[in-house]
Length: 78
Image (cartoon, rainbow, N blue to C red; front, side):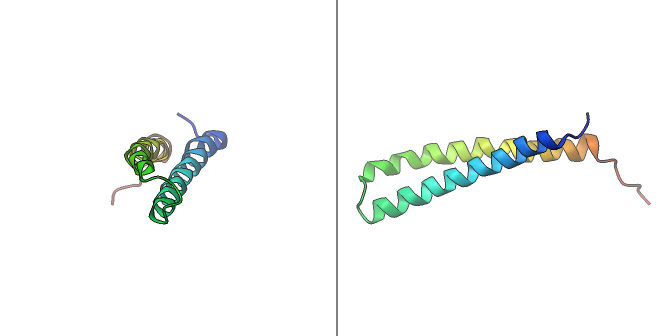
């Protein structure tokens, strides 16, 4: 297994960007529902956002774990 910058950009960069967008969506729904600019029914989308964040986090974290396990050589134990 090798390391390519493009893979790192896609796995870590795009994954983290999507997670930030989901967090912004969650904050916007909370603030808009609190100020009554949108219906309280929008709060029902928050579990969906939490599920999306949970599964999206496995992409960059899993990629970094694979890089640590298969690409970076283990340190010498002394």
